[in-house]
Each structure stands twice: as structure tokens, then as C-alpha cells.
Length: 298
Ligand code: GLU
Image 1 (cartoon, helix red, strand yellow):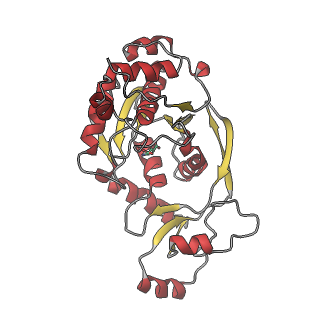
Image 2: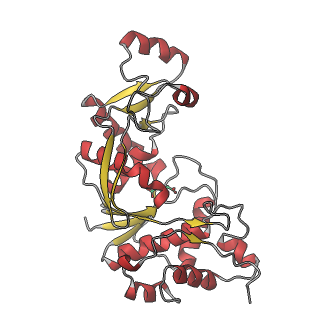
Image 3: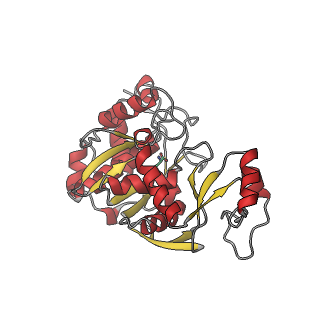
């Protein structure tokens, strides 16, 4: 399978300029290295009817094209079940009955890294599990053999973060994000993951899971997020931030594209022109503050 990069949006609403900037970067990284570029709709969670079509329309409008059809995670349950089955057969999973609140309130194990699952359900007896199953459905967690892991990132260098007993299958029966993303990237031949750096902390978990499943870990580039004027991560409430909202304010898609390219130090115009001079080493490493464009239309 030829190697590929990807953009993997969650169809929870329209993409905003921060999401679009990440998509443009993922496209530039993939295309500049001769990779295919795939779009995967991560609809296991937070899907809103109609959002997928809007997202694909906006990607195309900004000039991000992709190869082949769009893949949806809700169509891929057998792959996730197979991977979870392999982990379980190897003794690498266990049922967890904790609520979010119980996890927050549990005393953490000595030396446990912050944000790590405290291990409450790790060593339950069969009888204890039986009792708990009657009260609430179990999630399935990974029995991780280590507390942290290190990954190499093209922009961040060596990054070490928590590898805890994270969730493989949620207690509503749906595959968890960390499991699905690892299984899908490998199954789709994705060997380059470019995404927002809010996901860097999850990456050691994902690389560890790939190693347990005997899957190759992709190369990673976690790109800076776009911030609002207050320094917080850009969100829908920050005014006109989607192509639709900006168009209604008189700002055309080419203008938005050019602003995003300029923020990356790249030439304005069709993405192919930026591609011709794209150099990951020259990318700004700092988050970019969205200047706001509404009112700046023709
Ligand atoms: N679906 C995730 C999101 O939209 C991205 C996952 C990934 O790129 O690995 O935040």
C-alpha cells in the first residue's frame, strides 16, 4: 500500500479556520512527500447530521483534495473488534466500571502521572466484576505495562507523555478514539499523522498501542493551534470563523485561504503554489492568533 497522510475531522459542526489551517498543513506535508492524502470522518462521537457534507464541501473549497472515497469510522466496527479481541486474548484488557466522577475523586497511586487512570478496576476479582456488571455496563481498558512513553515529532522533537490504562471500548459499546485512530491509520496505510498539537499528549498512548498490535507507528507532526484574541483556542463562538460565516460577512474563500497561507509564511494563491515551496523546517512554531476577517470584505 502506498504511504499516505490524512485529515480526520470529527463531524460535530462546520470546520473553522483553525481546523482548515490544520487540514491545509496535513495536505502540504503529505503531497510534498509524494504521499496520498485521505479524509477519514471520525463519527464515533459527536456527529451532527449534515456536518460531514459541510466539512467536505469546505475542504474542497479551500483547495484540499483527497484520494479515493471518504472513510467513516462507524462503518469500521469489525476492525476495532478484531484489534480489541487480540489485546484481550493476550491478557491486555480489563473491564472498568468507574464513572468519570469516581476517577476524578480516586486517590491517585503514588508516583502516578497526572491525568492517568488510577487503576481502580485493574485487579478486581471475578466475583467483584460480576457484582459490578449488574450495576452498570463496563468499559474496556488497556492493561498498560508502562506509565509513560516517548514519541518523535517532526515539530516538537522527542516528546514524553502518559501511557496509562486508557479506554479501548467505551461503556456504551463504541470503540474509543485512541483505539480507532491507531487501527484506522494502520489499516489505511497512513504513515504520516499531521494534526493539531492538542493531540500531542495522546500520542505516546497511541504509539504504544500500535506496538502492542504489531502495527507500524506513523511519523508525527503536531502543528500549532489557532488562538483567539484572548489567547484561548479558537472556537465557533469567536465570531465569523467558518467559511460560511465569513462569506456572509463578505469575505471570500480565496481571501481566507490566502490569510491562512500568509500565516504559515507561504505564498498566497492556489495551494499548489504553496506546495512548490513548502518546507516543514520553516514553519512557524508558535500558535497563530486569528486576526478576524469579518468586515474586511470587498
Ligand atoms: N478527530 C479528531 C479531531 O477532530 C482528530 C484525530 C486525529 O487527527 O488523530 O479532533
